[in-house]
Length: 135
Image (cartoon, rainbow, N blue to C red; front, side, top):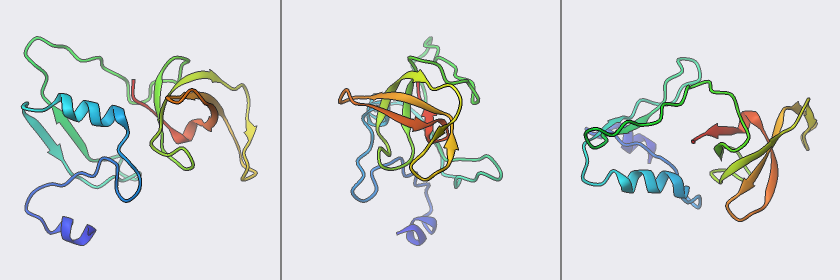
């Protein structure tokens, strides 16, 4: 499917939901809220080396100012985050605490972690490297 997408004359951006993984509800709500608005799509491939990633920019109604989040904003309790790795990949939750020091993960690695309250109410410990701030 990727080779076919790369040969299209228009951009294709995969948000989430490929295969058995559903799109997270926050991403879906943002896209639905942009219905009937002008949208700009940059389907540039994600690259850690060049720090580029695909993006969808939805125009806001005139006079509306969005909240601006710094790309490197620090994690703080109460933020809404998305988990980017299994077994909770694409789940959204709220930071409940930031663990001091380093925790030993099941893999044996040590990493700084945070408690995340998932939408179902469960609280899980997730490495900060596996979290994206979305609000």
